[in-house]
Image 1 (spheres, rainbow, N blue to C red):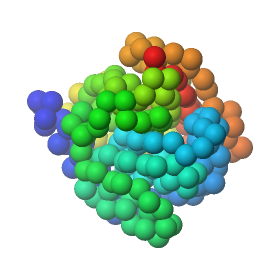
Image 2 (cartoon, rainbow, N blue to C red; image 1 turned 180 degrees about the vertical axis):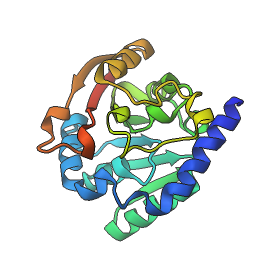
Image 3 (cartoon, one colour; image 1 turned 135 degrees about the horizontal axis):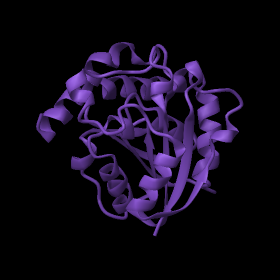
Length: 218
């Protein structure tokens, strides 16, 4: 499979899942919990410019907007964005949703104070590329917030791709906190901090080890 075929396969998968995805989504079941954890990870003392990469149905985008931030959110799946837009409308939240793959997103350099990347790295052929996009998009001393998990720990609950597509995704089994720390450091982020200890209850069923990390752009 070519790079473009991998991206198209991932997008098609999420388009198909979009109508039913929020039925079991963690950010829908426990939105206040996610908002509290993200508020701490953002460490913002006022409204900030937030970019959400791979927004899906809008988990981080909606939480950030509810916290009073100015939010732009990007995803390659029209189906997932349709669900996200409707959720924002129902909640009365102002989020600018844009259909674009992360690598192609029309992002101005140094245009954001915070970039969020939640449950995205495991779906990418080049996960470091998404973090490089985040670093370019952030202003000096801006903050990236990355969340993901070791999804292979609960195979009955995880999303899954075809075997051919999965072979092209280096983090298809998921990521550990150590994996994510290494990626962030390799891309040039510093001051990595963990926030998952703030969850008052496990955010996902099946005992999936998850992490929420923040890091600073130099």
